[in-house]
Image 1 (tube, helix red, strand yellow):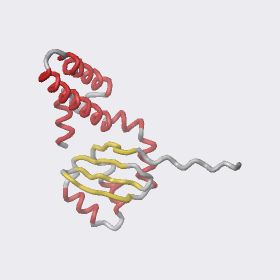
Image 2 (cartoon, rainbow, N blue to C red):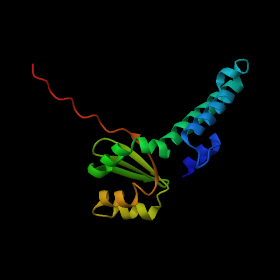
Image 3 (cartoon, rainbow, N blue to C red):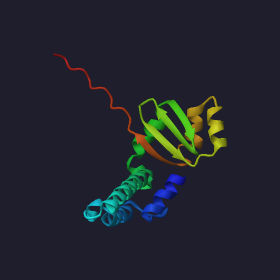
Image 4 (spheres, rainbow, N blue to C red):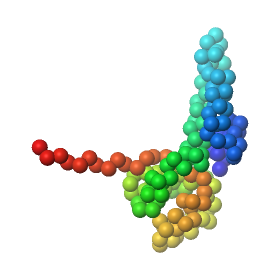
Length: 155
């Protein structure tokens, strides 16, 4: 959750900021903090490079957790969590990382320790994840699913 709050704070976004507004905030900040604006002052240019990288990271992160982005990826997401097994998982700072058999990786933010413990100690962890994590917390896709293999052609 801290990453979400920090990213919103940096860009001046709120929970209700849509992708169009987010893009406008991003463009405005990049105009202000672009390193090319500080050609004559190396110290300011270096600070602008750091700030612009932070702005870019925050923007891409907020786009990835946006409900509009989730809506665009909904079919693929539902297919992944509905039919692919979880091959790997870990938890750090209230963030659960789930790797699915199809190769996709998702992060779920703000997951309390007790929910993660129940997930780990549950025999049907995929079912538990679907019911209590996948649709209950803010998330983003970190890695797309692996592409299916190309069909072999006869020579």
